[in-house]
Image 1: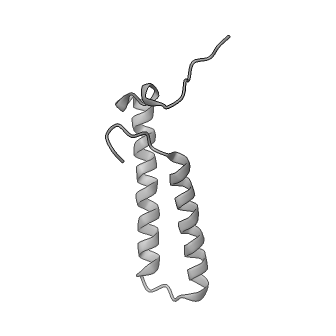
Image 2: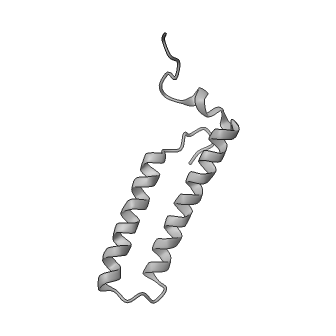
Image 3: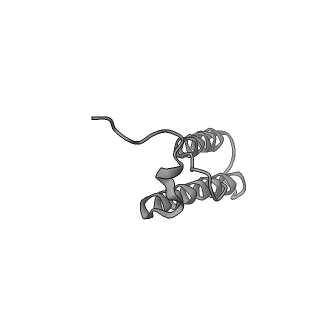
Length: 77
């Protein structure tokens, strides 16, 4: 993710869902010996850390998150 890029939370959550689905399917057919399961869980944890960091930046105002949003956040009354 670049310095000016807005984190795609939806894509991150979708990727986690897909990795968990893969894990569950492999769990029924493969023996858990610390290879495939370790790789999948590390990938999930990495994405979760990215999401947490993006939320932290968004709430702390770092990166001018709302100014860089591709759509208008102003409300017309």
